[in-house]
Length: 395
Image 1 (cartoon, rainbow, N blue to C red):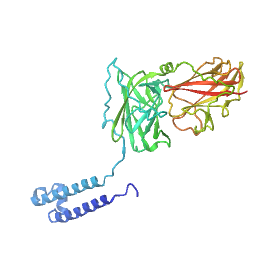
Image 2 (cartoon, rainbow, N blue to C red; image 1 turned 120 degrees about the vertical axis):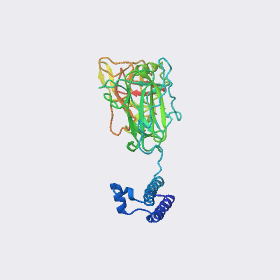
Image 3 (cartoon, rainbow, N blue to C red; image 1 turned 135 degrees about the horizontal axis):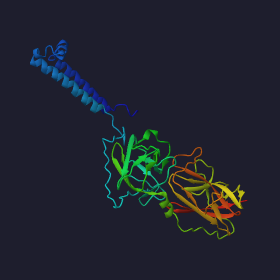
Image 4 (cartoon, rainbow, N blue to C red; image 1 turned 60 degrees about the vertical axis):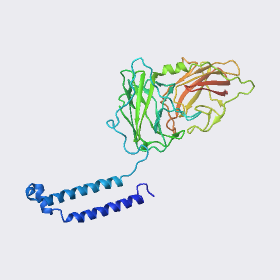
């Protein structure tokens, strides 16, 4: 049955209302004025001459019809689901963000993590967000083409969420603006419509938008997410991405092969837009065959190998990558060129993409420089953990 079809109770109520109107119309017919009397009254020509009984009948008839219309609207009004209908306006839901004095600690929101390996989200309503954060600190980076910094955000919702959500925010501990979207002229309000959500989900939640938060300075910020049923408050402390990379400078602890063969990391076919990649996620490495990287090119004594680093939606970044040869002495450098580095820093926002790449997935192209073939290991440090990828470089 169509969800818009009236139920048995609704049809019964409608029939009762119609019968009531018929009875009232018949009862009032004897008292109500003629059409000519009504026209004359409106024109102001016979108002003084209408008898009191006629005036009372006219008023009663008008009130009866008005009452019936109101009752009919109440009975026939469709019921809504979670968050159904238009998003609340700014006037209907004023901002109710906490107040934070200068020098006071930022009352950051805790993340909701369903379990090991699941996506860390902020918020407690039907719409929640995933952004690069750790222990209440959320990290931003420069955005090319604008004065506003950027935080790459995935907005998620429960599968039952329908309708729209209104998102607004402000800095809490001092002067500073907060916006959404464009780095040149960001929006002051973000409206999220569940009807436009792509067909992708993360840990059982639908991705309803991917829109960046924009700000200019570090500080304590709050956002309010209004849906049809409630308001949700999220507070975070915004810090530059350089502080995130400082946290990622952990000691390098590469695996020891302990045998003659290279203990290459297992491969996976779960990356939707690449046939095979090394790793089990949320960070993957592609660029060669199932267990090795090949097709190197000579450059200044090094073998340069093109690599594709992939992050799935569970990992928002940033990412620090370092490595070495583990079966013999050997050096590793990244990015080639005249000034190769011993570490690779992958930012939050990727400007590279490929076909069939779903929202929330990120890819980064880079070059690995090695002096000779052999067994190599990479340590991948993120805000949530450290992982290792082992592969063999072949001639």
